[in-house]
Length: 389
Image (tube, helix red, strand yellow):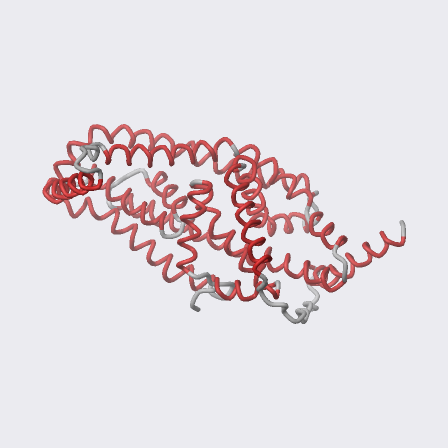
């Protein structure tokens, strides 16, 4: 080995020494390095413009090349979620390649199995929708007058804007078609990238710390090497804990929702539990859509009217307990995010990548905040992203 290679190897071993001590149960947690004096955010207009242009260029590439970039980002996030289980399997003596294969087969096999079990009830409910339109119209007849008034107002407003033209008719159908197109394209996009995501995830799990090791080897100073390892460890620990907590809580919400729907007579607890589990991955927007979905299901099948409203009310109560009490209590010690920025992030990444983008929005925002907190020149941005504790 050359002298240069020996230096890199020794640096990597020194950097990971404290980290390995933690895994072996030795209470030698590395002290946080005193960071260099912050140079501050750039104030040169040329530098600021360059940063803005580079950011816009990267976002443009992420939008245009979504078919390639989205599976990679999803695989990296899933790798953070599966990393604690990989470490446990490694401690049990399972080779990394076999551990990664077993983990992927177990997780995605369970997803496919649950999806197949829920597809039957979902098809049945989809078949009920056309014949239930008349029943739904009858139950919502009290809304006919407000809806007619709203349509008349929108028609007149559209006529004023277009100079009296009659182009306002059919707008509701066009909007519904656009929404359906967005949802369909998002679903097919995700399904088409499924194999690519699994493939990338497998090799990420097998590679372990290879990318971190190569990054440490090319950094110029030992201080930078230590900071890179510490920042990587912080991202991995916080995001894996966040994703694991959210997944467990979503599973609890799914179980509680399935039981509640069975108890109130809606039936198909597996279907509604899976729906609640998936919707809870999209903060605020997902549960809001869920309330409307359970309201529609109740109006289509249950009598009297108070019983028809019960599924949506029970789902809302479950979500409030989970979203406002349990999950914030579990995650508050890790990090908090500005809720306004969370909403903006959800809307932006849904526009960029559809439903998968909305699911990845909060983890990506959390990763960005952790990086900003760990890199001193970006500390002000990290502070700006912090919510009220």
